[in-house]
Length: 197
Image (cartoon, rainbow, N blue to C red):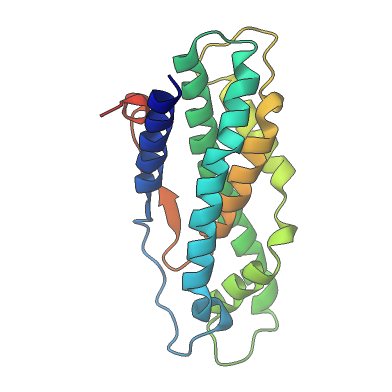
């Protein structure tokens, strides 16, 4: 009943939290003077991990509930939501890299001061996260999901129905890229996510 479902959700949540691992991508060498970005890194990390947990507890269940109206197979619904989260992370990471390149290019023309250009770019992005074009990322995620051969869904299902989950995941994933080191999802097979053990 309810107790079993709660235990299942708690184990699923724990597994996704374990997937939030430090990115293995090498980080450029940082300058010695701590910038505001570095000073607040641990508090931002804690806040973003907490936000991801909330997202997993609330928006994920809302997305599953919406999809269940159209797709009776719970496992397929869970797979769709899992793929939405993974696609959101990949799309946000790409958007972050492109955004950082533009910021670096702009700053390189006028950059002076003790911090490196890399630190200055990341600091700028942290202060201007609202400049991230979330809607473009949401559209990219939905387009990728529409052609994903691993999920099946009836024609009346529009993944725009779960755009809240996708958008919020993109926002969190984008912000996680500003951490040093960045936070990322570990890759896993779909089956691992739903395995109760």
